[in-house]
Amino acid sequence: MAGPVHLNSDNFESEVLKSDVPVLVDFWATWCGPCRVIEPHVDELSHEYDGRVKVGKVNIDNDPAVATQFGIRSIPALLYFKNGEVVDTIVGAVHKDQIANKLENVLN
Image (cartoon, rainbow, N blue to C red; front, top):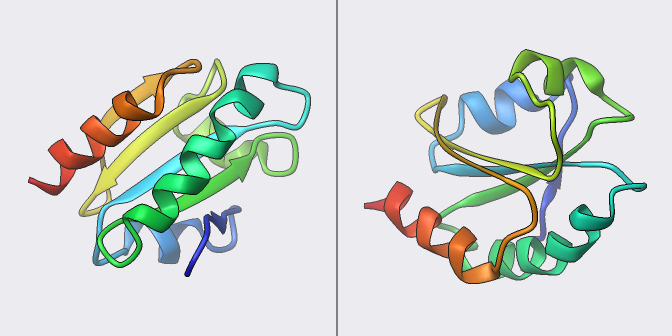
């Protein structure tokens, strides 16, 4: 089973913008408490949606350019991509069901 893909400015275009399937991108940092709260949810969803949705993570401290490119000002920030475009966003720690509901909307 695949887990989240670690994304950076080198692979973001190929892994996210040119992906054949929708992509959920988690912008996070190690010092961010709310990021740690949703991390297990994001990891679980990466397995539950394996093959239908790609899940990736961007550590904003390691690669601030990607976060800047998408106007990330608060984390955790979850961006939902479909056909290379941002189609939905969640900012802040939310319940797993909220993340999954938006994934279902992106798939339909």
